[in-house]
Picture (cartoon, rainbow, N blue to C red):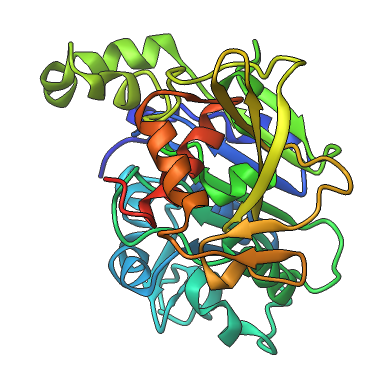
Length: 353
């Protein structure tokens, strides 16, 4: 059995939990010990008090592949000696080892699927006080994508699990890949600069969401010496895999809207609202998330965003084609990287590749 002292516990789980945030988003490099650390925390709390935790993945095939191996790494490093665990029916159970094999099994962790959140309504989880959503940020352009209204689905899942109990906490873990992730948008994060702080920690949504954007130069240097680290050296993949930088977080086509720019119209895409402004003197359009009061109707390209104030237009309409043409000429600038990436996704409905 591997000695515990050899374990690389890089991620500071205790420090992150000490903030006591209702929801914490943890964004770090791969192999930094996020999943390891929060799994070990859950096991230790269960052994101490009987508290349970829930581990969440987005799709059922992900849960099916990862849940049976959730504890493997922690146990392989020699933790939880004196206990034994088994995986039964999408949950982990544990008990103390006894000479006569009479220890009583009890639930340690529930392995849940976000896309099946509706099915957990009415199911009781009275001992679960921690929910961990693993891989909440998907790799850019990797299908399948995010769930429709993913934030709403996640919040409803938390409501189903926590009910109205106090002293419960949710954590979402990921690598820096996609700045347009729904939970980042929920926290109002649209650029790396908003979460790049000296400590790596920042509060959002009136201190209801804590973000830990973890960067570790020592760890990155060690990873650079691995086989994969040497393979990606000098390539665009290095910044993401070793530097924990967002793949779509670059500053191309970003620009601040000048005061003389005038509002033209607004559009809605996936629930997000965007304003289109034009600087007639420079011939440049600007897109941001600001919609003036009393701006009139908004437009959308998909039926799911329609409402009394949001009018659906055809994808071949001058509104849509004009935007795509301007974008192709480099005449559209954005206030943040996340705005740009959402805009590009919307133009994908019009045939942009």
